[in-house]
Length: 255
Image (tube, rainbow, N blue to C red; front, side, top):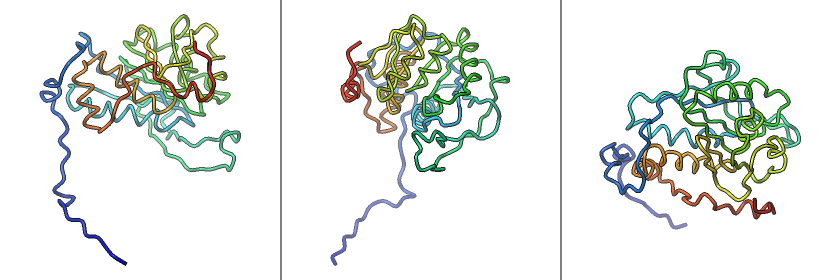
């Protein structure tokens, strides 16, 4: 059997040149950053959250924090016990899989710090019978937030908290009817990768959370910063908020 030898730099020699703040600001800018940039971020956690809903946007924020002073992140849950992605709903987890990850919260809902931005992920856990504490936290936190960002079915929790009433919003297209029924006073946009209405940003399913985070980052920190962070992650952004092949896949009517 023939073999091939690949030569190149040793692992120890490889470096990733993440852009400095100066490099980022040198990139072409099409939008001015917000004059009041947020510093305090919070992520809502609950059992059965969708991993990418959390870890995708967080990694973009990780890189953003390298060029922004005093950014803080609170991982928020009912208790300080680890919160798992494992789905216990047998409708979805038919083989009773225990495959998953855990996140250790930094704060409980009762001792949460003051937040500028709250991010609410989705996941099968949003369909649990007992999510009252999470809904209450969203409802009570919202008035003091600069921004609320929801990913996937996290919009359902925000809708149940009443903070999406009268607003345009979107959510995961695979379970569109189930989630949108939770917010009868919300103007749900079926064909959208993400929707921005006032200080609320909502995304379609799972991976769309990365795109809504970058769209938000561009609006708040400027195009140059968002472009620099995306390039450092080698992520190709979807720039069209109306791009949504999954709405067609699930036969949703235009709304």
